Image (cartoon, rainbow, N blue to C red; front, side, top):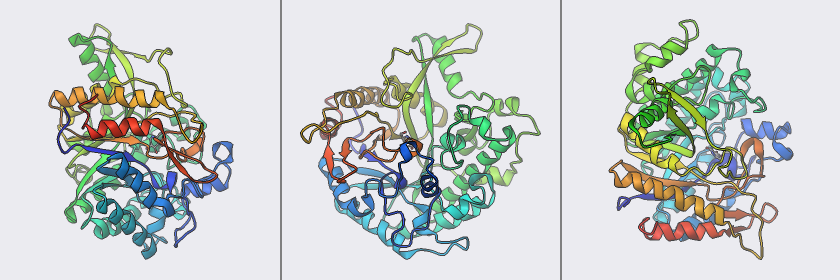
Length: 450
Ligand code: NOJ
């Protein structure tokens, strides 16, 4: 069973759906610039995207028809702040008031992401997350936004997917290197980026509390699943999930522990030398560990772990036989949701939302319909696993499918389609796919029919 007040929703992000890249006083973003430079697959760009800036009402009606009671979307920083002095663009604020009011009118609770990888180009030009100044710019932006919307919005999510930012998204100009650390000079320089992200998050949490709202963060992770139900494999999977491997930007305890537990894990000190680790003062740590009110997890996939028989673990990845979506990492491993939330809730003891989970395909419109059975199956299977966790009294508060609409998939452009609603990028018309109706039916029964 899911809680009676379970939040059923979909997630999107400003750059991926809004378009209107030069409208109503918006300044250029890091992504507009990448598009202008032709760095996106197929030379795609985010200038129009799904045109949700103008069609947000249609999108909210789609959510309403779906039966959703929550919508996770992000605010575009470049719509709000015009320059380095922090001057505010009132038209940008007015736009999001309209979106929020429309959600509330239809019984849909907004979950606002403050940073989903887009920032003003003038910040990017100064080095984005590698320059400490970004923290003070972020504080200004968050203060403006939360002050403005906290009277209407309860839930704010500070930063989306720290690991992917470290990997280059929202930060570095291309993602062509297979190994993230190659994008940095050395370990120290990627840990400095992490330091700025942690401080930005902590200050944002303090601001959220100052205005009496609730805050969380939404990292991603690849869940570790034990190959058997034996205690030693389960312990090994838990160990792997929270382990830190040098220069692996996808390790989660390196940021979750300081944020939630107020200290770095032992492994951090074993893996990185004194010279590599940036200085964190007591005061920094107290900012960073401003208590979270909830924890969001973006989770799509798992890797399989077995015990090495000596108290360690062997990471066996996932079998190549496991089906993937349009994007290779997008494997169908539903047990990610059960084991992911189980381990996270044991360690961090916070209410959990699945803030993203979804499946990419190369959908084609057929007589105005999309028969995306694989996506329907994906949703049902993953939600069954989440339900299992909920039935074991793990505090799961909600699930946001990624994404409501097909949209601009960053460097990959418009190739992969994750939506439960198809977007015809020529006409911008929306077509609910079969999976939309599958999800609608699950929501209608609060998951009892899974
Ligand atoms: C994670 C990101 O938050 C989102 O922006 C992206 O489109 C999806 N995953 C799919 O890759």
